[in-house]
Amino acid sequence: MAISATAAGVTTELRSAVERYIAAWNSFDADAIAQLITEDIVWADPALPQPARGIAAVQEFMRTSARAFPDLRFSEPDPQVLAAAGDLVLWGWRMEGTHRGVIDPPGFAPTGRSMRVEGVDRWIMREGRICEYRAFYDMNEVARQLGIAPVPGSRSERAMVALQRLQARFAQR
Image (cartoon, rainbow, N blue to C red):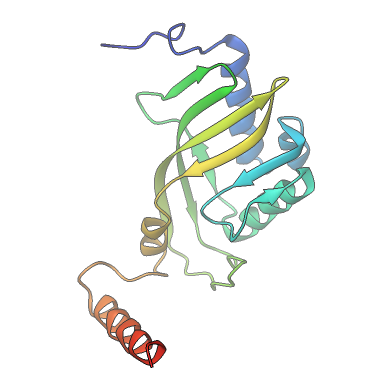
């Protein structure tokens, strides 16, 4: 059964917020993103070692992302995924970009490779702004596409497994 926009809780205002969000990220406009989030935002993303807290921290994450992926672009998959229930919003997206700068943290050097991944954001809204943000996507797939993590079944993966087993054996002593 198809879910209509009304049944999914999607309003014109929410659709507009998603469009502004995409535009802010695609232009790396830190001021525009600040207008979409609360002062006390908690921003959890698999690319971060710990959640970013506050507007300035989210803006720095955006700037860091721009340095690592200067052509980073977000779009919506077909079919679009957008649903809301009360203050909860779920939004599906596609992210693409080429690794041209250091990914910091942890400091991975640029590989020149491109990545393309789909994910879902969960937003908790307060007074029309995002106050809690969590992104869900396969960071291992991103790392594989960028050449940071080995391809399953490859010689590199077997070497990593051997190293992990050796580390585990020494840790048990």
